[in-house]
Structure formats: structure tokens, C-alpha cells
Image (cartoon, rainbow, N blue to C red; front, side, top):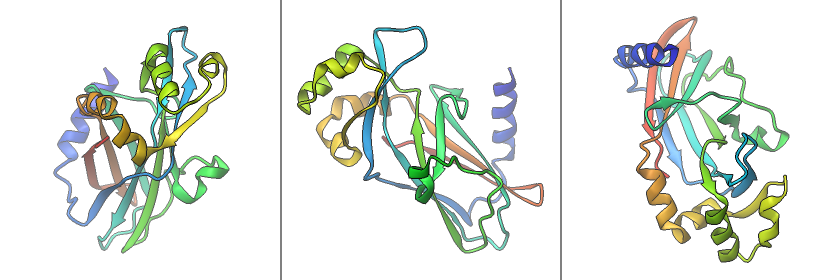
Length: 191
């Protein structure tokens, strides 16, 4: 219920000026991973695809707080459970993005997102492992397995990507200045 109310508030606030604050998708050069799925399902794994965006603030206002949401199949996901957002240059230190981070006027924030909600069967994962000549026994371990760089994975796995595109997933960012909502940006995730 609270997600429905949140969506209604976001839609109502979407009339806030977004002309000067933009989200620009970037094709990631980072790796795709397959990770264990730990929610009582032994027949599935997580397909962890990297997403990257630039949040560009060309407004006259400084953004002093941003709230991030990802919608998946018309439902809202939970951060720190379903996905993690990093500032790109802090990703390798595992420092999750501080939403109270300031983005000055005429400045850019490079966002990097790792998700835990794209679930595939172990049979599908086995096909991916065979394609990339990875030891199939790694599927049953508790380790994440590096597959390929995302731009390459997109080209070599068009069926998986087409399936993801049918979900109509979105990234939504609400930006604030001194507690006042100044923009809501929604962009469809273009897998």
C-alpha cells in the first residue's frame, strides 16, 4: 500500500521542473555476474547486470538530497535488498551512495547500480556458463562468478536482453534543495 501511495506522490510531483536536471544512461563497461540466490530457492540464481547513469544538474539550484527508486514489473523495489546504488568512483570501495550528497549547479554525478532482483533459472545460467566456457560446477557455490563485460553480454545474449526489456523497468530519482522537491526524473531502463 505504501508503494502505491509513493507512486501517486511521485506521479503528482512529476510536474516539477526536470528540464534542467537530467538522467543520461551510459552503456556500462563493467562486468556481468551470476550470484547465488539466497531466498529459499535452490533452482535459481541472480543475473547481476551493471547499470550506469549520469545525473546532470544544469539548474541554478544545488541538489542537497536525492531519493532513488527502481520500479520492476510495475512494483517498487527496495534499496539495499533488491539493488545498490554507488557513486561510480566509489564502487570498488563498496561505499554505498549517500543520498544527502550535494550536487552543485552545473555538476554531474556518475551513478552505478548493481541489482539483486533479476532472477534466472540454474538451467539458463548453465547455458551462459557454457557459452563463456566457465566451469558449470560454480553455479552451486556461494560465490559470484564473473561472466563478461556488459556491452559484450548485451550483444551476445539478445534473447535475455529482449526478455528484460519487456519488463519496462524504470529508475526514478526525486531531487531536493533545502527540503523542497525540485525535480523528479524517471527513465526507462534500457537493458
